[in-house]
Amino acid sequence: MKVYADNSATSFPKAPGVSDAVKDFMDNIGCNINRGGYGASYGAAMDILATRQLLCKLVNAPDPRNVIFTPGITYSLNMILKGFLRAGDHVITTSMEHNGVMRPLHELKSAGVTYDIAWCDKDGNLDAMTVAKMINPRTKAVVMTHASNVCGRVLPIYDIAEICTARGIKLIVDTAQTLGSLAIDWACVDALAFTCHKGLLAPQGLGGFVIKSDMAACMDPIITGGTGSKSHEIAQPTMLPDKFEPGTMNIPAIMGLRVALEYILSVGVDTIYAKEMALAEAFINEVSGIESVRVIGKGGSGDKIAVVSLDFVGRDNAEIAAALDINHGVMVRCGLHCSPMAHKTLGTYPHGTVRFSFGHFNSACDIEYIVCAIKECIKMC
Image (cartoon, rainbow, N blue to C red; front, side, top):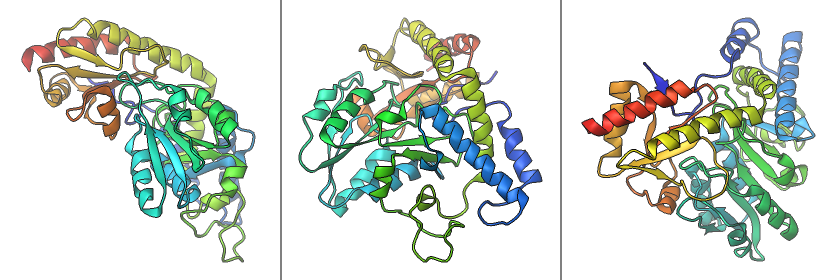
């Protein structure tokens, strides 16, 4: 038996019809957009517009032109941070961030950008006032994850959005772990970075961001080149989305994303979230009673997503993860999950955790099987 429990890394399986849509485009259409004066190219362009419109519906954004496609959320965060911040600017982030945020911020220090870290408690909870107290006259933005990829804690983006709005500061949110499975209202943020291969149940190699027009106007494009628009001008176009979409985009993946978004919207994000959390809570209830198993980030009253990290006290976490795979076919991730600062916050650095992340297509039978597998691995390791 094989059980996939690594949906925080990438969702599997994808939404029904996604692979068919990708294959159909590759086999029967295959053209580019904005580079061909024929019906197939125009049709593909309309399909991409429809995909932007579906993303707008998902996050309550009014204009599909403000949806930008990129090769992934790491590209999105780099484009936003490096395009928006200037020497002398100050940024506030949190101690639960992924390296997708922390490494660009670290690199920007050499360009004269400074940042401070709002530390969460040992369970990953963040007090919004911690962020408020760090604001200074040079603070230009708060950049933060919507939910931790280590312990699943949801951070208070709406409370922080109120603080940012009152102080004239931009809020940039990393939704890698939430979009598609936890509702978010784009109206409260200035830039929402997303990936398509996790909660959106679509192919890898595609992401993007949804951005307010006033912030986009203040950003420089980090990558420039052909867009198929205003080809007579040597300068990069300034209109959206062209300003941030040079070169050929991953059209086959976008065709898959369209089908995935239609599926998610038909099922309902709240329904997806309720199912995933029921699985996670059942899992936590079962493993909490196992001797030598410590559930990380279990305390606190804040919301969570279906990500559960375990520390196997007195045992090698990597051995447990390997045994789960080799002996029982349970696929999980062990280590620091590209979030070393989150592990420092949670008290699991440097050894990390074994992470179980449940998705829309997991079942109660999967949870039962995984718990039995964990008990067997503890006996053997």
